[in-house]
Image (cartoon, rainbow, N blue to C red; front, side):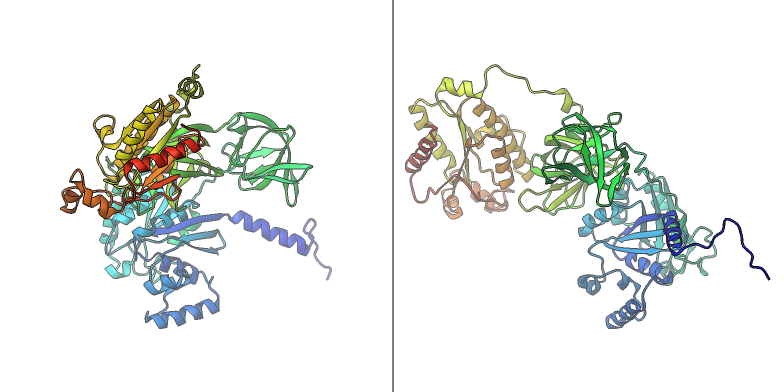
Length: 636
């Protein structure tokens, strides 16, 4: 019998079969999602159930989990152990770090982030959510919607995740009660109405028993919606990476030899082609793309997510942190922005304090100039406040040392998000989402003056500077500064003294002694001292100024050699025995709160230009020592 041969259906080669399989994999698509919610809501167990029931767990992993389950006395297979990998997580039965797992079904591929529910690990939850398209928010059917549930929902909304599934877990512990499920779903729907979710789908599940996770539950005939996996396989996720305007943050100037100069990075959004005209920000210079270089050869065009090196046809100055865009859709640039900030650190956010701000490849110093309001996660009310505490969210205005190139977070997550970093510990203290640039940032310009600092100093025949006296109350700062100014005045120098108590009678009379007010106190004084130095004066500043961060902020306002820190290092016991104003006695009696040295910390300088101790020398002797230093610096 002759062999049947179908024209146009030649047998595939091995290479063609591989290509077909790769193409089929790409068509399945990838969903990045996270599980979140309050502690002990069953997030890790749910992911373990998805992996186990999808037959995506290796036999050796199952044996290991069985062994660990017996050791822990679980009484059965503890599926959470498939996800909780840290020893501390297994011992405490909690999630601490973000755990990522990959799994797939015939309809879709998934990367799931298991995020912690404990309040102290909220920063890890926000980190895991920042790269996700979808979220499964778990609620314990016994306890219902909790404060941490609402907090996680707020963060998901701020991060721009449009669709979530509300998985009401542990339904087996409430006897699969329909009324209980309906009450929780209605409670969350009422709360979420004030957020920016496009879709919330409530699904009753039991991660422990497997009900409604992959297969429909035999115990909840009253539920007619999708299973959790069925919803994950079909939920629509819009990825507009290539549709958004082209953004290319420069990560590195690639100069392997004298014949090649390229600018390496990852395309944050949009598409660019060889030959396209682009604009380099913040300089505004224009150039044309000559080549799009990769390790596998040149490309004709690059898309969102591609790691490439761009070369230009023209000679232009481009540095790390610059942003490359197309001329018809350019990013914003401002040194003042409005943003939502989620605070991660135990030490509260203090407006006026200087932090490092990192936005993509850009790094600059920034201060929170004002906290407009805090977000009450229980009812979404806007609450007045001066600071943000651990895990609080607020709307802030920030001022940066140099113009930031950005897009609003709602338009581009990659170029509209940032983190704040403590300048001394390098700890990440906050994450932020930019709303918009403040218009006053572009309306206000420096006025060029005919007479500058050098001209004023020359007229006075002196070198202007600030001597910043810091130390405990009663250390002798004002006495030494006062004596020094008297000596300088006798030498014919033009001086001014800014004293802590005197300033609080006028300029800073509205400030108290909380940490936030102390920061603002020093910020105002530092700016005032800068104006006096600009006027050509030698300025004595006598303030406790207890925090290193604010003293560093003050130092950064001045030019090289203009800031001289004088640490009056008098022991606390001696300061307390002097107690010229009776403040230590009141502080010890509890009549004064936030008193430096008693119930508020003093952070000694680490690299002061001068350190003096009034317990060892008189004010006159110490003044002579400071004058000798000023002569050495050719200031007097």
